[in-house]
Image (tube, rainbow, N blue to C red; front, side, top):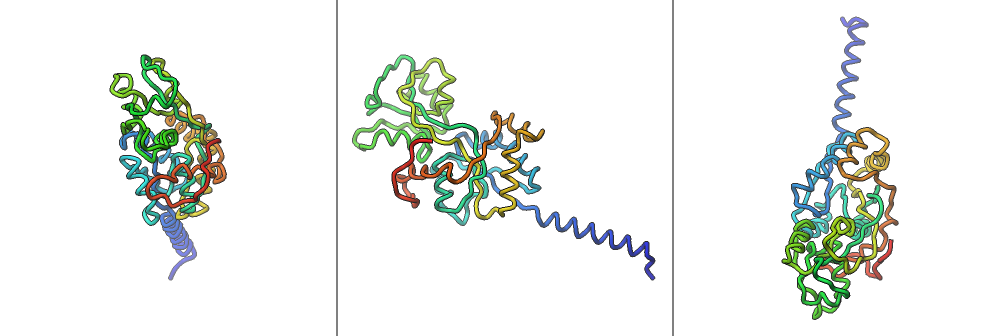
Length: 281
């Protein structure tokens, strides 16, 4: 015969076992994709603090996934059934997924992004037309830099000789060594060099956004939004931001990126809206 004490202990044990089971069953696994602006190993190392922070704040397991170049990234992105749960990437990709796959923008990195066409300090050019036939380095299409470069040379008979580089560091090393004539790189990076000339700077676009796929429950997405926007107020968040070398994430929504998908309209496989591309922030 069970005593009252035994019954109470049994009930308590049952409650905690059910609570433990419930907590375990709620936890989920999500992928966090980062656009391939760096070699895969460097991407994982640089953005692991973000994945760790979001995992801790949500109670879910968030794992970084990378692609080796923008062509593979674009191909993977268009496969809706095997897409990404969470993504941190550029304005044109963000808007494309919002328009065609139902993603939701949660937050963005601060400020805007523009690209600059740069030459070596001894290679003085004054007009982009002078780049026709010259060796110009860019990350492969459909990276934002390559699309901006292609905008400037719409006539396929009058274009530079594009040199595809895997990242900006290699492009700048080759430029300074005289192996190429010019490169298009983020303006923020160009500003760190004293031994180059800036030929042209493109219109800015909103900085990279963190967005969530429709497969991420709304409650989880909102938890991530709150955690990332308020990261600068939390000790773990401050440490993460310091590792990413940013002060904080900014609030953003789908409207922030409206129109930028149209930068992709000439890219093979594009199936988004057709209209005039947006060019100002």
